[in-house]
Image (cartoon, rainbow, N blue to C red; front, side, top):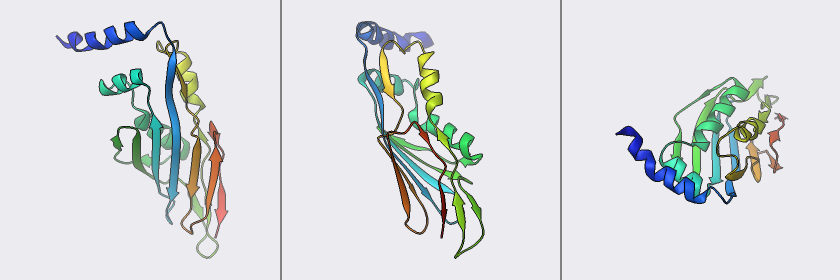
Amino acid sequence: MKGTRFVPLLIILGILAPAPSAALQADYLDITVDRTGDATVTFEYTLSFVEGILAFFGAVGPGQDLGKVMAAASGGEVGHLAESAGSASFPVTGFAAVSGSSPNATYRTPVINLSWAEEGWEASVLAPLLAPDFSPRVTIIRFPDAYSVTFHDELVIPNTTHTF
């Protein structure tokens, strides 16, 4: 009985299999660091039709995957994920290392390597069907004093150090 719920999914994939299509596009990644080094991460993305169906069935979850990357990069803990169609938001405790205190506190964010997603995707059964782009078009890292750093189309977001 459980397998019958995936029959419509298999039919749709069978119809779309001959034609590779555009896939996940990472549109915007916003990382807002607070005074303690914790961060709020907001991720906006666009899914293809096929991925939308897979997300409906719970087979893909870009927000959850990004949460795992953030936890691994920072050694921090990812809080409750708020996910809706095309976006996800979650807190990450201990995202940035903080040394010193105001007025000379130094914040250092970790390297965020999104290339793991591309490598994993290439080994996926769906790789011939979809061509995802895991590098966010725009990534912004914001610090508590309103200073920010912006990156464009970077698959590996370098660590950033800021003192204020």
